[in-house]
Length: 496
Image (tube, rainbow, N blue to C red; front, top):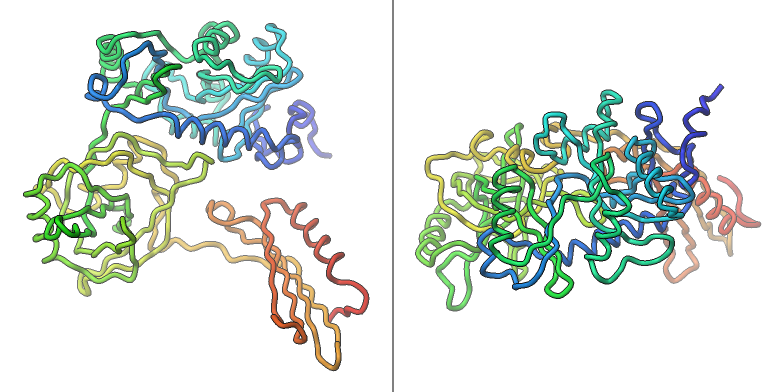
């Protein structure tokens, strides 16, 4: 007999039969299984809109680029962005990637607070983070690990949510002024429970902002600060990160910049010895460095079966992976605003043939505001000096331990295949339905199921037509099969 104890406790906001139960009452579902799919869409839209509004700055920009004014300053929490969806005494979390979390202790806390405030429905934005018992800095990897595979109830108890915005409450949109929004957040979630307002203060001067940056970021190790002003805009203030990377390609300047370096293509090395493209850097060079680097790199050119395209649709000239440089960046982003991964090509390099070959794409990150710092002639291109783990020390990156050289995907499995024929004017027409399970959905680049419909009619101007449908739900792909069958396999068609 099926265990209904968990499904009976699941919120009615999601199809409880589709929840994967992790530990006790805690389970994980998918955005497509929400009774109201727009909750996932609104989460993605909010993340995309807010990300585009937050202007990245570094410490020196406080006095140089930050407009004068009064700001709401909050501590940037290193966690997983999520929206709390509350309706009729029930709550769950949705992130932009479509992961839905139910049964967390923090959700029970949220229900108590919102119910006490007589709120009927709400969409609340915040960061899901892991609260360490010793008070050390929370990192997104800690939250992701505990949420993905909790080792104990204590792991779940330590998952908290720092609230920083409101999408709507009881159908009413967030107030235009952020100060009013945060005042309501403070009233609803007062205290230091598992769900609480993000730590924040009001500041008016550059000196105050510098003080909090020195205290919270440089002193306590917080990820950064977020500054919001109704009159001057929103900013994220973070320390720069320094990375040692391998140079694997370059482009040359044009016109008056001819004979000078335009930018460099950089990579990091995975544990298996393969090189994964990280990004390009084109600022921070003096004119003298641009001339010297270009001259040096032209003597190190290499062949490649893979082409990376730079600015102006110009392909990078690949070079032997021999030069190491230090770069700095303002931020590293490991996911899109819709929650998808940022995949970068992994290359192998044949030292004898001086040739690159593509292996496959794996998740990595995008550089925000990269700047050249210096050449590192004291370092070499190896799995220690230019290791990919440098990035994982700062952000969570999936599949970093996988061997790109030997990694292979599972084989697909044909689930259904039916072919129908019909004779018209002495010629045979064919219609075929084929459904298969990819067995590659865990990879993140493939759907779970594919339906392929082929229609061949020799009497048409274009004899062959095809249609493809994909889904991660067996029930949905079966429904699509039935839809194609009823619309296309009509009277006169005989199964071959």
